[in-house]
Length: 304
Image (cartoon, rainbow, N blue to C red):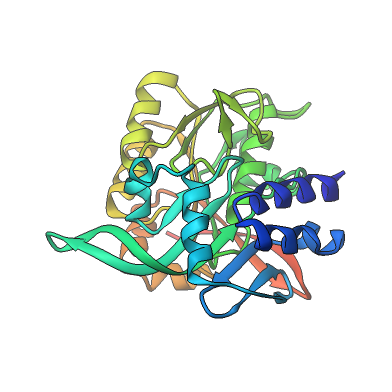
């Protein structure tokens, strides 16, 4: 069942590829399709497929025009409607995928206003892995109360996948613990994968989703509107995000978030996140590590 779900996600992401690249992707063995995490396209090189074991070379060359076609397909030929995310280097796909883009920045008043002349792209394949949070979720409680938790790993380490499943676990609850009201600020639409108001991923029956809104704005909105017990966000990257999470913590709401970092020690050496640790916003860290091609999840208590 999990393999079939993974292949469906692969097929959905492949639909964003231009014709001949799509055909090459669909011709890959099903086992590789089930393990795929990203399509990597670089102008003048061959398309590769990223798996847990590295990049697999498909042998199919990528032209710069393929990257332009990819952008057109991803935006349904309406780039102007996606300029806000495009200037930040990515596009969202229906089904929860994301296209990361490199090229030439179009600068305006000292900041990137758009991208042009694309040189490479990474199509991330969303993956729902149900059950990976089952053994972790009970360890994130003290005296029956959920303790704020941050998920750590380098980019591509599986943070969003684990975040989604922990949200599911908290929302459903167990025979020993009632489900919690979870408010999800899904800025890039990758966690719940909403389609006409319905989540395409299993995020539990007590989860409310605000999609497409910056986290710094979304968290206060969710606090006012939905009275959550847990606020969840993907990828804290800016000081404004930290302020929003700190405000939620001061309101008595549990927090569940992800950050790019390989370890707690790395977190301490980044000034922005050192402030977060000093503020004692989070009690636990779940560190994702890859060993022998498999992801391992380690719960660490954050020292004050």
